[in-house]
Image (tube, rainbow, N blue to C red):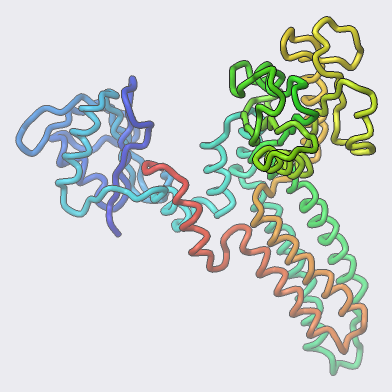
Amino acid sequence: MDTIFALATAQGKAGVSIVRISGPDAENALNALSSLPVPTGRPSVRSLVGKDGTHIDEAMVLRFAKPHSFTGEDVVELHVHGSIAVVQAVLRELSTIQNLRHADAGEFTRRALENNRMDISKVEGLADLIDSETEAQRMQALRVLSGELGKLTNYWRDKLVRAASLIEATIDFADEEVPVDVTGEVIDIIIKIRDSITKEIDGSVIAERVRSGFEVAIVGAPNLGKSTLLNALAGREAAITSEIAGTTRDVIEVRMDLGGVPVTLLDTAGIRDTNDVVEGIGVSRALDRAAVADAIVYLYDDTSQLAAFEGDEAVIRLRAKDDFGDYLDGISGQTGNGIEGLIQQLTQRFGDMTRDVGIATRERHRIAMHEALVHLLNAESIVQQGPEMYDIGAEELRISCRVLDTLIGRVDVESLLDEIFSSFCIGK
């Protein structure tokens, strides 16, 4: 296998930059850069020198022997001064060493997966941790990275293998004088795992939202201060504001951290009947986005408008342009009146939702769990029909296990791996 290298820290000027080398020739690479022997057991300082004798930099060198490294291979890390010129000189020198090549995106992590240092769910957790922007995202990513999804999947699988083995043992000894009825025990196992998977599917919807961000649509009639409210919540001029009704034609999105939860605010076109084709498209888009938003902030200035979105628990109704706090439910992006109260409502709402968050964080997880559940329900129905149907029931359980295996990469998921690793930086 090739030995790979790459910058493991962010591009650009920094106090320290780390160049990572992984593979069978990692130590040879260090020997080519330094005349001193490879350090063992502790960090050491080495002078890095090019083939032409040019002094490149002073580096702190760390060595990790296989299989106890991140990748499961021999790894050497060069901690150099974070100058762009220094880093480029080190990378350039490494590229001249035989059997070394620059790593592809995510290749270090891919090798960790191939060497059983991680399963695919941990890889996804690592990707989410790198991309995390809020506290909720960080904590959720750490749960997956720590292996919680893998442990849960293994628990489900072990129980279903137990159920299938009970059925198969009954089939194998069907001719014995003392038949064994395992229906009750098998059904108990199926019900227990069925309920556990169902709970995780329900929680995965919220987990996906934590990962991608909750959406809050600000809707209402034209010229009620929706864009001004968006700017006040975002703390910047994200949307154009004007006294002219219908200024906002498209949906404007602003990301923010709300109590540790990622939220995307949506400033939408004013809702009204219009003959303007472009404005009409904006109104249609506003209604479409509001229909799938996690919360709706509905601004009104006349009680006759309160019938809109009636009965929708996701709606927070606020009287618009209440500059002086004349109304208990009033809000003003201009003066800031009611802003803090709205933030508290949204924070409380999303905080309550994330209490039931699952550890399956991606759509593919939810799809796999749902498919496994379908086969599990089939097995439950079939096994209850009696021993003559046991062989079919056992097959349904085996299929359910194989589907669950995709959650942690026990089966062929090559195309999925390509997609996951393409999102990693080169040095990860």
